[in-house]
Length: 381
Image (tube, one colour):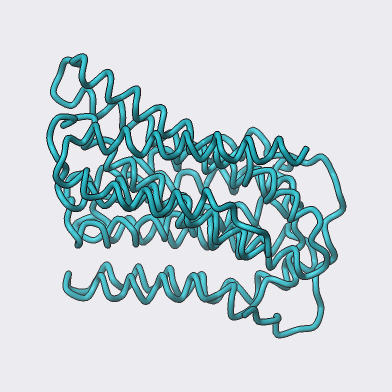
């Protein structure tokens, strides 16, 4: 169910153009390479349910910051001086957020919260001054929830540790409820640019999995033959996931956004990208922790949480691809549902057998899905 904006005035669809992500936007995204590494590092150092909850909350706040600027740069031309200076200034604030992320619930809670608040303040100011008439009207409705959520995170920094997690939960709830409650009907969306921005952040998430392979293989110094073999299997898994996303979803998502008319376009952008791409990206980032543990301990079984992250992450990725298709009212291939079930079925192997066997099974599942989907696609051509 979607809710209309409080006003009946809606944004006109962005005119079809060839606008693509600028080099400044690509530069801006580099901050999130380190941010994702911090999230996986936090969870790898504390592989417990509490550590998982902390990592997920942290990732949700980071994603909201990134998503806010994806909408902003979709509406504002970054070739001009003011947007350029604001984005570079925001990178400084995000650097503080990323550097302090591992202690965001502890000793570095204040600098993290201040940096996060500054990110949202700069976002609101630039949208309000350079976003165009209707986008400015839209951000006036959305900015209160962004500010309230960010201020709650700041307030949590001054409260006892026992309260911080609960306040963070409330803050995240406020942030994510905002676009659903106030609506996004006034926003104009350039579909090609918006889709590309999200494709690029998915690439960054995949990059974190590649980094995890290297970190896991070299954690204890030299690299053995088994670690090399395990690393190659992990690369095969990530490559098949990349193929599954970019050979299908990336193209279908942009196509659907281009052909959406009126308020359907910003609503589709909100649902399939701002909301549904979060668990999709999270599945890759959290799976990276399982990959790191697997590459470093290929002959051993995994502990419960790394096993869940490895197999559950692989399953969640496919599940979100299915959910996105359902939101667009498209048919979900049987191979996707079968893949979700098969990935979850590998969990006992990861818990009780050699980790490399579980990793190999997941890679085989994904390669099979890619082959089946390719054959199905070419039959219809």
